[in-house]
Image (cartoon, rainbow, N blue to C red; front, side):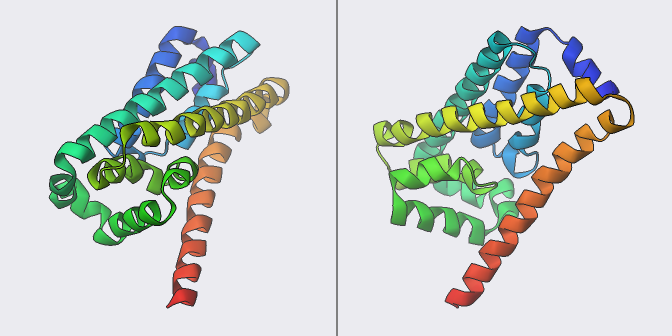
Length: 203
């Protein structure tokens, strides 16, 4: 498959730099609301063919997560209300902002950790944490282990997919990229349905 083959031909440092850069903007500039970081990291993970490359990509992805979350926190601390009133903030919708804020108020630090594994919400939590004035040490103390765990899992999953592609190749190999995107989309849809059902029961 040209997509995976082209990725595999990239220099490992270039690929890691791209993954780091994307993760930086995912949670600071709200890019993750429109382009899932899950799919990006999974695709990057398909290029891993050695423990050294795995460790390098996990480190780059983790660093990108923490840099983006730190910047998002700083933006929330300084411009939180303005961001919510901006064009992007209005596109997100008041309901999603309110859910992220309520989740953070009720659960505190553990909510920061858990949000890393929840699509959409994890892109909002750093800004919301800064807006609410959560101490940075507490915020990053929960965000760091979440970033390490999330990066390790997703790069590992991508590595497994890449190994399968290299072994299978041919027709089966062409199904890998659509399967990655389809899985991410399916998880997002299922999570949204679960959230709606929970909200309906509470109402």
